[in-house]
Length: 386
Ligand SMILES: [Zn+2]
Image (cartoon, rainbow, N blue to C red; front, side, top):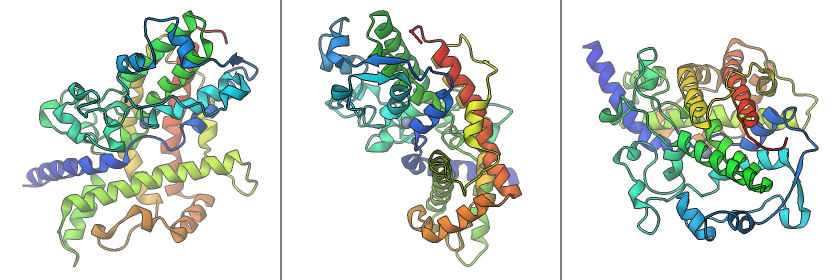
């Protein structure tokens, strides 16, 4: 009986992820993460000259920008924006290019690809469990990688649809490889600005899959228990799926937005703000070089599998650290719950050492420790002037 209930909870929870995928599209600040990982690794004096994309393409078989976009199957209306004022600055720091453009794949290139005038042949029915066809979440299939069912972590690695349970889902590893291949082509042809920009694009995907909330369709069974326990309260069991979606979305936003807050405090050198263990230290600390000579696709898969193994801990740590929502989960709207009062409570909790705070920070730090090493190995694998 117990097994039956647990199994049906699995299904209900997993269906709820369909709508949850709306929110799960990667870290808020790739540029900050990339910069901290590479700050001491890439020579700060290393600079390259800007040149337009057409200049790189003229050395290749791509006829023009449109045929290039078609070839790598990004949104045909996407424009490669130069947000470092390249046209006027002309000479740019490689570290700036790497950090700034590690956010670029979130700027629209991977969205709305299944429309008739884009690449409808890319659609797979299982992507309905991974963000669907429309809007921002339609890019999820390229920004995630969910591993196959793994006996050591059956809850975290469980996913729907059932026919895909023994296979991985998501294209993040392939996109990482594609952009790294483009980078190598650009370096070989001596178009170093585009080489580094494509490396930055490539880094985005490994960083995305390293977010524990993004690497699992079912992060923690405690969330199921929370909804079930509400069934015994006066709120009852109405809208189980909606309640579950609200809970996961809330903890996902809390996990990520609080990290973003920590980053901004640290980077602005706020003297009143100290944090230990420090996520930025973890990004810089590990120089074991465990990922040397592995392909970008392989490193992405390894990061995702690691993040998957941390996802249950991420769920538990978030539940114990962030303010608990009192009321019907049907009314749990992250945007309004995470208001000024919520932030005052959370920042006060961040300032005091506690078991819950350490769990939250340790969870981030465990993942950042490996991510830093992987990204540095990735950069070392690039055949380019450093
Ligand atoms: Zn992303």
